Image (cartoon, rainbow, N blue to C red; front, side):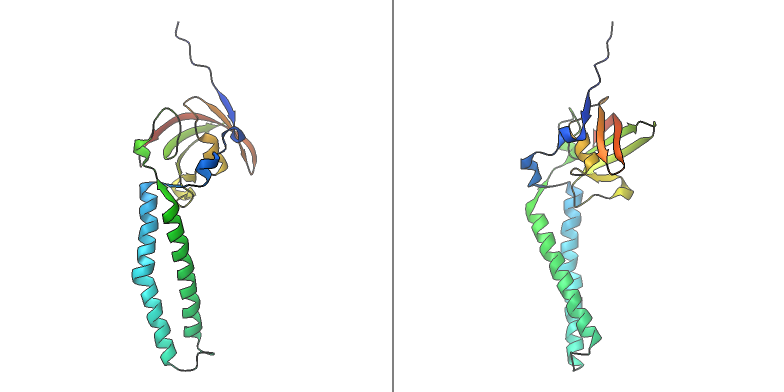
Length: 178
């Protein structure tokens, strides 16, 4: 007689990310590349262009009433702030290739198919907080749903506290590819 393995149930607060993972900026290789590409664009293209615009505005004379100068300086501050942020995130990044994950359970980078209590199927990839994009079905591993799905296996029922209240998901399948 072939018996099915018993279903396991978890609550999302049973699976909070561990303290050591909290300090890491986990990210997929494609997410890391996007951060580096944005930094490169800001430093090589956008910032030099704005510096030139500010230089041209200075040549026009009175800076106190020069809108181009005021806007340019503000834009430079925004660019510099973003560059500092990107440098910090890249420095702290821990790149994890989903294809190299142990497939024994749902881990960072997994693409997970779940079914909710109404029978609706949803597919999400669990990614880093710098690359989440709901339109692309990418959720952060630190989000309630992402954290709740970590360590689940096929057939597990996971109860996750969401802003709309608790939701019960059944893990249908998961795989690792980017």
